[in-house]
Length: 62
Image 1 (tube, rainbow, N blue to C red):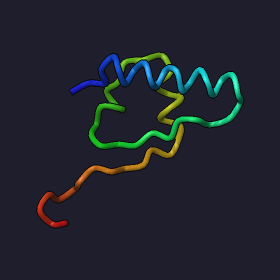
Image 2: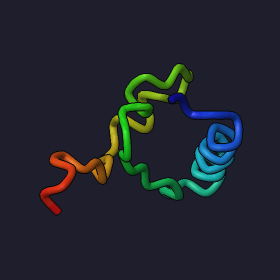
Image 3: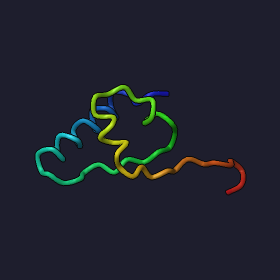
């Protein structure tokens, strides 16, 4: 799975808003590894932040 166009557009708009307003508007979360495989010039901007990890490590143990 990859970050599709819909989500990529939302990410790009949020990053542009941050550039305009000078404050953080995007708080990335991890539900899979797509953020690490994402091919985008601003990938490093997201990975510098704390990325909330919402992956289930041991399915069935919850």
